[in-house]
Length: 334
Image (tube, rainbow, N blue to C red):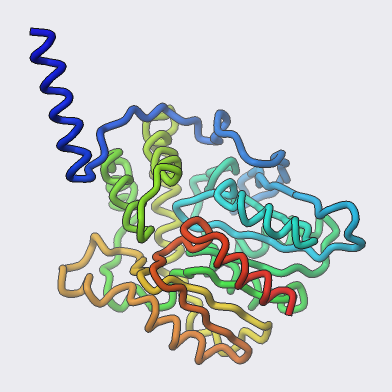
């Protein structure tokens, strides 16, 4: 009987390998502050208030090489489904080029507090400015990925003198989702998030990249692990708040007012969009046409440059770090 079981398992493993279907894996519960998750650099905290609620903003402050005198600062803003640690390779590339690198986990994400309050791009931009004030940084380059791209654009619109150059990596919000995606209440969005499974998150993150690699699994596991933790309800509410922020607060109409030099860098295979699961297949096919949307956005930018990376989807700095860093460092140093 044991021989039969072993043979059956071998056949199943081979079948999954041939079909390239991942075997189920165990996901450990994760605390709401990612207490057990190691970041690539020391994490500090800044006390703030958001909608009258005391919160703590987690951030990494990575110094440039000591040989660099008065190094310029670069702020890295993460996407909605990610957190500051996924910038590890980008931090190393920037530090090696002589930059001081500031990487906040925005409130509601990563190791930062997750208050049950409405979110706004304006509030997050203000938090970044408050962090820079605390660190005595007047001006910085700002790089934002995905939802972080929307936050970076809002920051540049609110605080133009604070921004040297702006990099928008695969930003969402290059289209107005309200025109195609039905509105959803916080209650519905919370329930939807809480009903997500490990497989749901796996599918989500596999759609973010052109070619899946095992090193990407950690980002899916964080999302699944949070829902296994003791404060899953707060996680669900936070997901609802941040979804509605991206849905309700487009910045693309203000791109003509972005006066700072701006690099828009996207993958030609990127199809990311808010609300894909809430529309018909016919409408879904029209959402997230990022290369075309990026061309329109770049044309609206007064001082914009567009780079479209071939064979890349939604996360260029993870999928093809060497190409991404070459473009970004060349732009910042030009």
